[in-house]
Length: 125
Image 1 (cartoon, rainbow, N blue to C red):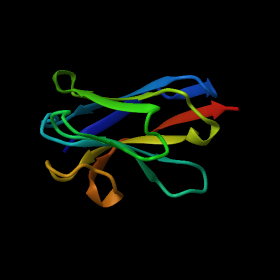
Image 2 (image 1 turned 90 degrees about the vertical axis):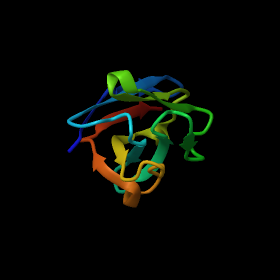
Image 3 (image 1 turned 60 degrees about the vertical axis):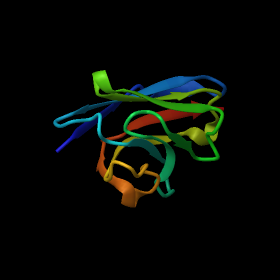
Image 4 (image 1 turned 180 degrees about the vertical axis):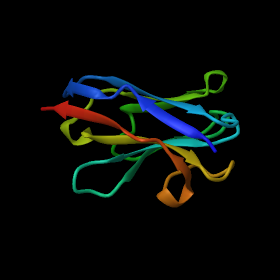
């Protein structure tokens, strides 16, 4: 079983940047596709970004394309989400996710095998 721990959330002004990290432990990380989701108050959890097991493929929600970048360092068992040009509507709890299947990017909750506990991102307008 893998454990996922997010960090890097916080309060930032609109237009600012944050980098989230997700550290994985408990089993092999380098074979797993990974993703980030977010959930705002009163809303469904939604997909943000995903990356393949070797970092060769990435995929983003339309709402963050061009502003967010997902990356990973398999030697450190860590996946990152660099968030630039943050907007008020990016405010949410951000969750790290491990894909269920090696060749399927986790873009829906059905694709996710494990979740982190979440980290709060608040963007002030």
